[in-house]
Length: 148
Image (spheres, rainbow, N blue to C red):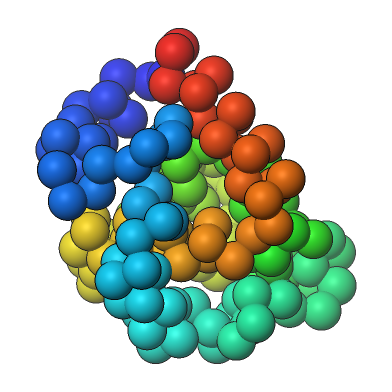
């Protein structure tokens, strides 16, 4: 894990309100946090990623301007392929900042719009919708990422 993740996430990981039973950062089992995340998702994310987490059509194919459409956050997408720390960084700083090397994305970071806790709540909501086998695989991924 790059040092900037550890530095950036230390205050979030230390927050007792977000302690989870599983590996990772997301309090996806906390119904209050999940409901909060669902409301924030509806306000800030659903217009691109879909009201039902379905993403935009043809999300794997670049559009005429060279951008990838917003991917789904349901099990058909790749969100669950990334550890919590990476999902948090992407949401907070934007994918362009994460990938670098001139990568272009229409999704900017939400760090100036949402608090760290609000970002975690949105991600917790998303994870709470996944089937148990996907959640288990995601938790395994987090365990590996947490031990690096």
